[in-house]
Length: 156
Image 1 (cartoon, rainbow, N blue to C red):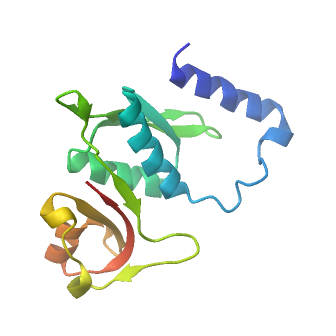
Image 2: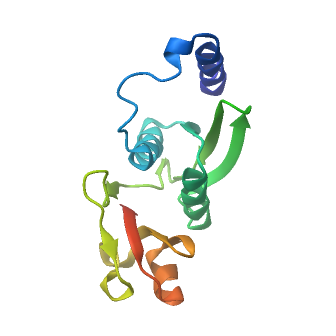
């Protein structure tokens, strides 16, 4: 059984059992942090892909990571109630393309950066992902567009 089949089977079980639909502790979970840590850990474990629950923000973040060559592919899977995103991981010389991630803005502390406060990450070898009025952008794109926003996370 592949990981994708396992996730589909568990999601189908949640539909049959109403007490599994909203498990305790999910209310205050940081979903973006969960996504980026799944991607980083999957790369370190040597997986070919990882699955994350679907949301429009996560899909937009994944599209930015795809455009910046941190991941290989994105595909939406699942039905109406149980959607998720399958993210294909990218490897370079046998190691993951993603070396590290750091969540900047958290549930308890939101961090906003104006266009003048946006600095390079790891001397230009990484990216800062921002949520701006023009969508999810990297630090380089936000500087070009001359917009600031909420600093979601750093990736290198």
